[in-house]
Length: 316
Image 1 (cartoon, rainbow, N blue to C red):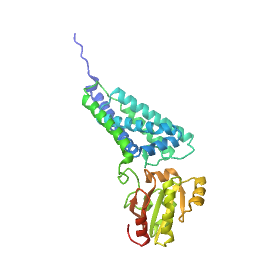
Image 2: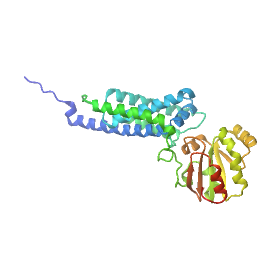
Image 3: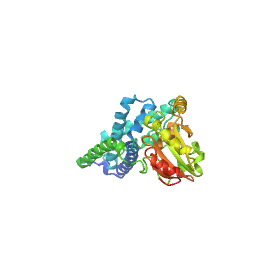
Image 4: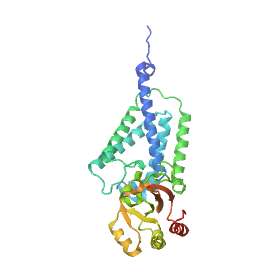
């Protein structure tokens, strides 16, 4: 008497489950890849967000942020490559459980300081409810990715890919603050050619929709910025056709101190951090607007020669 053993993985049902699990894993891997990239281009901004939400003290926020970037990159490489190893899926699922729990907690008890959710860096703004929904969908993908795993197959090459991607993510995250990538898509929203109305701070500077305006993104506490104010005031006093307006993070105490001790001759509007942060990685940053369109961006304040050119009506 012979006994026939059916390989469940080769059955139609097994193949269907494997297909669903693989597809879910790839989709989750793509989400991890986008998330890791969005954080890696501005690791200090991500760390600042972690600290502002009270998740970790500032001294631990940057190492923890870089660790999240590296783990997400490794998971992305593994899942996209079809490496649904038990350890990979366990880490991915636990990470999504944590993210969903955090999102739900912040929906019930919002942090004192509003910030973007951090899932996809500072550029993707989500409401607390949207944050919960997105993380719930990603957790569902993580659970579906367990379906139809079947027997393990040789995966040495895929593990090597994961190691390479993980190491590359670490190197990039450490180097990113020093790289001139601010104008790249997905790094900041502020680039030459974008319409002013597409920027989250547009409502704070309605005057900049007509004519030429120099918009300064500043940190009121930065000593170099404070020292540059007198030279910028000269452009105002020169009666140039180019208007000047500055944007800084809301801070009533620092606003009064900056006004009376530094004496800007131009308006400085306070805006929430989560509206300002998508426009920069480091401050100060400056952009020139003509008739509602960004035509020039500097990753600094304009220099004296550029200010003189603007005062004379010339393009710097």
